[in-house]
Image (tube, rainbow, N blue to C red; front, side, top):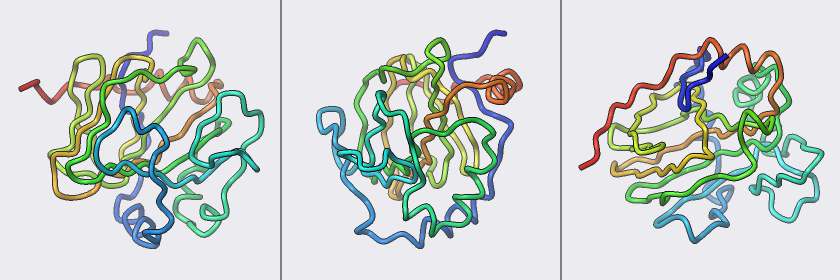
Amino acid sequence: MIIPNVARLALNFDHNKLDAELATLAATDWQAHFNHEIYQGDWSAIALRATPNGHNAIYSDPSATHWADTELLQQCRYFQQVLAGFACPLLSVRLLRLAPGAMIKEHKDSGLGLALGEIRLHIVVSTNPKVECWIDGKGYHCAEGECWYADFGLTHSFINRGDTDRVHIVLDCRVNDWLLMQLNNAAPGVPKLSQT
């Protein structure tokens, strides 16, 4: 089985319900991302699954052995329904918001990869046509309600050149047979952006 570096899974979610759920969250629920070195502007997060009693709820701790739904997730019925559709072990799950004008600089995520048995998926909750996703030098645009896999061990960056927030549900998943089947049936991502 050959899995592309970027792929759109055959999983789609109701973007109107995603938006409605997002609107129920308070401004105070968002926490600035802890890795200040790799971004400019407003990049913030809300933990939906986290390590109980961990030092930072939005940190996806690679050494953690136990993850649990957060109190906030228990208030979000559609987000719960979305996550229930993943028949694989879910580790850290976060909402990540990139505000207008913000950027996540080029970097690589360690500890992830098919060979390591853990991958990262993105579900697009809200976006705009001026959001850019760059992976391994190629530019992609993902639509609301879509679910994407990428090898985030490759160099990647995100830029929000629009005037609305970009929000993704970011799931760290343990690889199992169900997830391998989803990846095997996924459509390879087609670059849609060119560097200027």
